[in-house]
Amino acid sequence: MRRPIIAGNWKMFTTPAQAFVLVDQLCAGLPDPPAADVVVAPPFTHLAQLAERLAGHPIALAAQNLHWEESGPFTGEISAPMLRAVGCRYVIVGHSERRQHFLETDQTVNRKIRAALHADLTPILCFGESLEEREAGQTMTRVAQQLEGGLEGLTASEVERLVLAYEPIWAIGTGKTATEEQAQEVHAFIRAYLTQHYSPELAGTVRIQYGGSVKPQNAAQLLAQPDIDGCLVGGASLSAESFLAIIQAAWS
Image 1 (cartoon, rainbow, N blue to C red):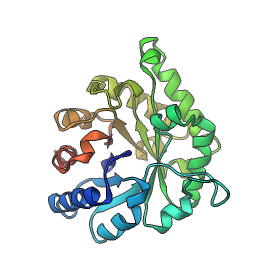
Image 2: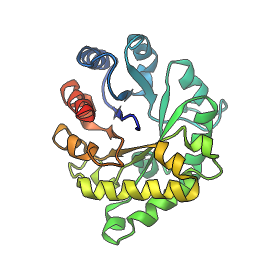
Image 3: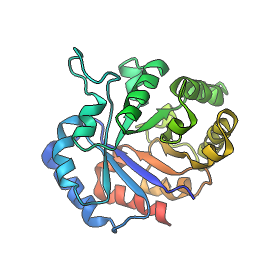
Protein backbone atom coordinates (compact mmCIF):
# COMPACT_ATOMS: atom_id res chain seq x y z
CA MET A 1 0.00 0.00 0.00
CA ARG A 2 1.29 3.46 -0.91
CA ARG A 3 1.13 5.83 2.04
CA PRO A 4 -0.86 8.99 1.21
CA ILE A 5 1.08 12.26 1.05
CA ILE A 6 -0.64 15.63 1.49
CA ALA A 7 1.51 18.69 0.80
CA GLY A 8 0.61 22.35 1.18
CA ASN A 9 2.24 24.84 -1.19
CA TRP A 10 1.97 28.25 0.45
CA LYS A 11 3.40 30.04 -2.59
CA MET A 12 4.15 33.75 -1.91
CA PHE A 13 1.80 34.04 1.06
CA THR A 14 2.21 34.46 4.83
CA THR A 15 4.51 36.50 6.99
CA PRO A 16 6.60 34.60 9.54
CA ALA A 17 4.09 35.47 12.27
CA GLN A 18 1.19 34.15 10.17
CA ALA A 19 3.17 31.02 9.38
CA PHE A 20 3.80 30.34 13.07
CA VAL A 21 0.09 30.55 13.83
CA LEU A 22 -0.75 28.27 10.91
CA VAL A 23 1.73 25.51 11.81
CA ASP A 24 0.75 25.68 15.48
CA GLN A 25 -2.87 25.11 14.47
CA LEU A 26 -1.87 22.24 12.18
CA CYS A 27 0.24 20.58 14.86
CA ALA A 28 -2.61 20.90 17.36
CA GLY A 29 -5.12 19.41 14.92
CA LEU A 30 -3.10 16.41 13.70
CA PRO A 31 -3.21 13.05 15.44
CA ASP A 32 0.21 11.68 16.29
CA PRO A 33 1.18 9.78 14.28
CA PRO A 34 -0.97 10.78 11.31
CA ALA A 35 -2.04 8.16 8.79
CA ALA A 36 -0.60 10.22 5.94
CA ASP A 37 2.67 12.01 5.30
CA VAL A 38 2.04 15.73 5.79
CA VAL A 39 4.28 18.36 4.19
CA VAL A 40 4.21 22.17 4.16
CA ALA A 41 6.13 24.37 1.71
CA PRO A 42 6.38 27.93 3.04
CA PRO A 43 8.36 30.80 1.51
CA PHE A 44 12.15 30.61 1.85
CA THR A 45 12.18 33.31 4.52
CA HIS A 46 10.32 31.10 7.00
CA LEU A 47 12.14 27.80 6.53
CA ALA A 48 14.73 27.93 9.30
CA GLN A 49 12.32 29.20 11.95
CA LEU A 50 9.58 26.75 10.98
CA ALA A 51 12.05 23.87 11.10
CA GLU A 52 12.60 24.69 14.76
CA ARG A 53 8.88 25.12 15.31
CA LEU A 54 8.09 21.74 13.76
CA ALA A 55 10.79 19.79 15.61
CA GLY A 56 9.17 16.75 17.17
CA HIS A 57 5.96 17.15 15.16
CA PRO A 58 4.85 14.86 12.30
CA ILE A 59 4.95 17.58 9.62
CA ALA A 60 7.82 17.68 7.12
CA LEU A 61 9.20 20.84 5.59
CA ALA A 62 9.53 21.49 1.86
CA ALA A 63 10.96 24.30 -0.19
CA GLN A 64 9.14 25.66 -3.23
CA ASN A 65 12.15 25.72 -5.55
CA LEU A 66 15.93 25.31 -5.74
CA HIS A 67 18.89 25.95 -8.02
CA TRP A 68 20.71 23.04 -9.65
CA GLU A 69 24.18 24.18 -8.53
CA GLU A 70 25.45 23.68 -4.99
CA SER A 71 26.88 27.20 -4.82
CA GLY A 72 28.01 29.99 -7.11
CA PRO A 73 27.30 33.50 -8.41
CA PHE A 74 23.53 33.03 -8.74
CA THR A 75 22.02 36.06 -7.03
CA GLY A 76 18.65 35.37 -5.47
CA GLU A 77 18.90 31.58 -5.74
CA ILE A 78 18.88 28.82 -3.10
CA SER A 79 20.78 25.54 -3.36
CA ALA A 80 19.84 22.03 -2.30
CA PRO A 81 22.52 21.83 0.43
CA MET A 82 21.22 25.11 1.88
CA LEU A 83 17.70 23.71 2.01
CA ARG A 84 18.85 20.49 3.59
CA ALA A 85 20.87 22.42 6.17
CA VAL A 86 17.82 24.34 7.41
CA GLY A 87 15.72 21.20 7.81
CA CYS A 88 13.94 20.63 4.50
CA ARG A 89 13.14 17.06 3.50
CA TYR A 90 11.23 17.82 0.29
CA VAL A 91 11.41 20.38 -2.51
CA ILE A 92 8.81 21.24 -5.16
CA VAL A 93 10.30 21.14 -8.66
CA GLY A 94 8.80 22.25 -11.96
CA HIS A 95 5.59 23.85 -10.71
CA SER A 96 3.62 25.32 -13.61
CA GLU A 97 3.98 28.81 -12.15
CA ARG A 98 7.75 28.40 -12.28
CA ARG A 99 7.53 27.11 -15.84
CA GLN A 100 5.20 29.92 -16.92
CA HIS A 101 6.61 32.96 -15.13
CA PHE A 102 10.29 32.00 -14.84
CA LEU A 103 10.66 30.05 -18.08
CA GLU A 104 11.71 26.77 -16.50
CA THR A 105 12.07 23.92 -18.96
CA ASP A 106 12.04 20.15 -18.66
CA GLN A 107 15.83 20.31 -18.94
CA THR A 108 16.28 22.70 -15.99
CA VAL A 109 13.71 20.70 -14.03
CA ASN A 110 15.79 17.58 -14.65
CA ARG A 111 18.92 19.31 -13.36
CA LYS A 112 17.07 20.45 -10.24
CA ILE A 113 15.81 16.93 -9.57
CA ARG A 114 19.36 15.61 -9.76
CA ALA A 115 20.59 18.31 -7.38
CA ALA A 116 17.80 17.57 -4.91
CA LEU A 117 18.47 13.84 -4.92
CA HIS A 118 22.21 14.43 -4.47
CA ALA A 119 21.42 16.44 -1.32
CA ASP A 120 19.05 13.74 -0.04
CA LEU A 121 15.95 15.85 -0.65
CA THR A 122 12.78 14.27 -2.02
CA PRO A 123 11.67 16.13 -5.17
CA ILE A 124 7.96 16.68 -5.75
CA LEU A 125 7.95 16.80 -9.55
CA CYS A 126 5.05 18.82 -10.96
CA PHE A 127 3.68 18.58 -14.49
CA GLY A 128 0.39 18.98 -16.33
CA GLU A 129 -1.32 20.21 -19.44
CA SER A 130 -2.82 23.58 -20.37
CA LEU A 131 -6.50 24.07 -21.15
CA GLU A 132 -5.68 24.36 -24.86
CA GLU A 133 -3.78 21.06 -24.76
CA ARG A 134 -6.62 19.30 -22.96
CA GLU A 135 -9.23 20.61 -25.38
CA ALA A 136 -7.02 19.47 -28.28
CA GLY A 137 -6.82 15.95 -26.86
CA GLN A 138 -3.10 16.30 -26.10
CA THR A 139 -3.16 15.69 -22.35
CA MET A 140 -1.38 12.34 -22.36
CA THR A 141 1.14 13.45 -24.98
CA ARG A 142 2.06 16.51 -22.93
CA VAL A 143 2.28 14.58 -19.68
CA ALA A 144 4.53 11.98 -21.32
CA GLN A 145 6.78 14.73 -22.72
CA GLN A 146 7.20 16.31 -19.30
CA LEU A 147 7.89 12.95 -17.66
CA GLU A 148 10.42 12.05 -20.32
CA GLY A 149 12.25 15.37 -19.94
CA GLY A 150 12.07 15.57 -16.17
CA LEU A 151 13.18 11.98 -15.60
CA GLU A 152 15.80 11.83 -18.35
CA GLY A 153 18.87 9.87 -17.30
CA LEU A 154 17.54 8.97 -13.86
CA THR A 155 17.95 5.41 -12.67
CA ALA A 156 15.02 3.39 -11.40
CA SER A 157 16.28 3.74 -7.83
CA GLU A 158 16.36 7.52 -8.26
CA VAL A 159 12.86 7.69 -9.75
CA GLU A 160 11.64 5.57 -6.85
CA ARG A 161 12.67 8.40 -4.49
CA LEU A 162 10.44 10.98 -6.21
CA VAL A 163 6.89 12.10 -5.55
CA LEU A 164 5.04 12.92 -8.77
CA ALA A 165 2.38 15.63 -8.83
CA TYR A 166 -0.06 15.85 -11.72
CA GLU A 167 -1.41 19.41 -11.81
CA PRO A 168 -3.52 20.38 -14.81
CA ILE A 169 -2.57 24.01 -15.40
CA TRP A 170 -6.16 24.97 -16.13
CA ALA A 171 -7.16 23.92 -12.60
CA ILE A 172 -4.46 25.73 -10.61
CA GLY A 173 -5.86 28.68 -8.72
CA THR A 174 -8.90 28.88 -10.98
CA GLY A 175 -11.44 27.13 -8.79
CA LYS A 176 -11.84 24.54 -11.54
CA THR A 177 -10.92 20.99 -10.64
CA ALA A 178 -10.51 17.94 -12.79
CA THR A 179 -13.26 15.48 -12.00
CA GLU A 180 -12.14 12.41 -10.11
CA GLU A 181 -12.58 10.43 -13.35
CA GLN A 182 -10.41 12.86 -15.34
CA ALA A 183 -7.74 12.87 -12.65
CA GLN A 184 -7.75 9.08 -12.28
CA GLU A 185 -7.43 8.63 -16.05
CA VAL A 186 -4.23 10.69 -16.11
CA HIS A 187 -2.84 9.09 -12.94
CA ALA A 188 -3.43 5.64 -14.44
CA PHE A 189 -1.59 6.79 -17.56
CA ILE A 190 1.34 7.99 -15.44
CA ARG A 191 1.53 4.66 -13.65
CA ALA A 192 1.42 2.85 -16.99
CA TYR A 193 4.26 5.11 -18.22
CA LEU A 194 6.35 4.12 -15.20
CA THR A 195 5.56 0.46 -15.84
CA GLN A 196 6.63 0.71 -19.47
CA HIS A 197 9.81 2.71 -18.89
CA TYR A 198 10.91 1.18 -15.58
CA SER A 199 9.00 -1.74 -14.06
CA PRO A 200 5.63 -2.72 -12.60
CA GLU A 201 7.26 -2.87 -9.17
CA LEU A 202 8.48 0.74 -9.41
CA ALA A 203 5.15 1.89 -10.82
CA GLY A 204 3.40 0.35 -7.85
CA THR A 205 5.71 2.12 -5.40
CA VAL A 206 5.92 5.73 -6.65
CA ARG A 207 3.35 8.06 -5.13
CA ILE A 208 1.40 10.33 -7.47
CA GLN A 209 -0.39 13.38 -6.10
CA TYR A 210 -3.18 15.38 -7.69
CA GLY A 211 -3.03 19.17 -7.54
CA GLY A 212 -5.31 21.88 -8.86
CA SER A 213 -7.91 23.65 -6.71
CA VAL A 214 -8.08 20.81 -4.19
CA LYS A 215 -10.59 21.66 -1.44
CA PRO A 216 -12.24 19.82 1.45
CA GLN A 217 -15.32 19.47 -0.76
CA ASN A 218 -13.55 17.40 -3.44
CA ALA A 219 -10.59 15.82 -1.62
CA ALA A 220 -12.33 12.62 -0.55
CA GLN A 221 -13.59 11.85 -4.07
CA LEU A 222 -10.14 12.44 -5.55
CA LEU A 223 -8.30 10.43 -2.90
CA ALA A 224 -10.68 7.51 -3.29
CA GLN A 225 -9.30 6.86 -6.78
CA PRO A 226 -6.94 3.87 -6.99
CA ASP A 227 -4.00 5.73 -8.55
CA ILE A 228 -4.25 9.03 -6.61
CA ASP A 229 -1.95 8.84 -3.62
CA GLY A 230 -2.30 12.33 -2.22
CA CYS A 231 -2.77 15.99 -3.00
CA LEU A 232 -0.59 19.01 -3.62
CA VAL A 233 -2.75 21.76 -2.14
CA GLY A 234 -2.49 25.46 -2.90
CA GLY A 235 -4.87 28.04 -1.46
CA ALA A 236 -6.70 25.59 0.81
CA SER A 237 -3.44 24.87 2.65
CA LEU A 238 -3.36 28.46 3.95
CA SER A 239 -6.23 27.68 6.33
CA ALA A 240 -5.58 25.13 9.05
CA GLU A 241 -9.24 24.14 9.07
CA SER A 242 -9.41 23.39 5.34
CA PHE A 243 -5.97 21.77 5.16
CA LEU A 244 -6.75 19.51 8.11
CA ALA A 245 -10.04 18.53 6.45
CA ILE A 246 -8.13 17.51 3.29
CA ILE A 247 -5.66 15.52 5.38
CA GLN A 248 -8.57 13.84 7.13
CA ALA A 249 -9.96 12.82 3.74
CA ALA A 250 -6.81 10.78 3.15
CA TRP A 251 -7.58 8.68 6.22
CA SER A 252 -11.20 7.96 5.37
